Image (cartoon, rainbow, N blue to C red):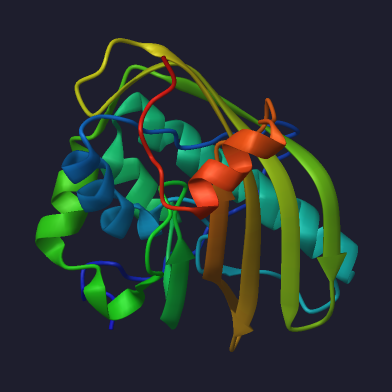
Length: 205
C-alpha cells in the first residue's frame, strides 16, 4: 500500500501547456535507493475530472498535473509534489536506472523522505509525444526535460527522460498506475546498447 500520508487530493485544473521531469545520478547505490522512491515521480494527482470530459481532454489535464507536480519535485518542493500526486495500490515503477521494477508497497515513508531531499533548484518542461485515452485509462508518452537540476548531490545539469505514464480512474478520481522511464533521449550506439544488455554499466571513458 502507498503510505497513508499519500492521500488523494482534489485539484482544479488550469490551462497549462508545459510539462516536466525527474532526472538522477550519483553513486550506483544512491541511484538505486532513489529509484525505489522515484515511484513517486511521474505523476498524476488523484483528481476528480468531470464525466462529461472527453478522454482526450482528460489526457491533456492529467499531463498538465503531471508537469506541475514534477516541476515542484525538481525544485525541491516535495510538499507540493505530494499534494498533487497519488498512486494506485498496485502502482509499478520501472526507473531510469534499470533493475527490478518497484511496487507501491515498497514506497515507505523513509524512501519518500529521501526522494524529497534528492532534487534541488531545477525546472522542468514536458513534451507530450502521444496520448492514448479511454473512459477509465489514459497512457501518456512524454519527454521530460529538467533544466539545471541538482540531483543526488551532483552539480547542476540538464536531464531528459523518455517516459511512459499509465493513469487509471478509481471512482471519480485518476491515479498513477505505472511509470517507465529511460535517459536515452540523445540515443546510444548499438555497441553501447549491447554492453548494457550484458550488464556492463561502467561509465564511458
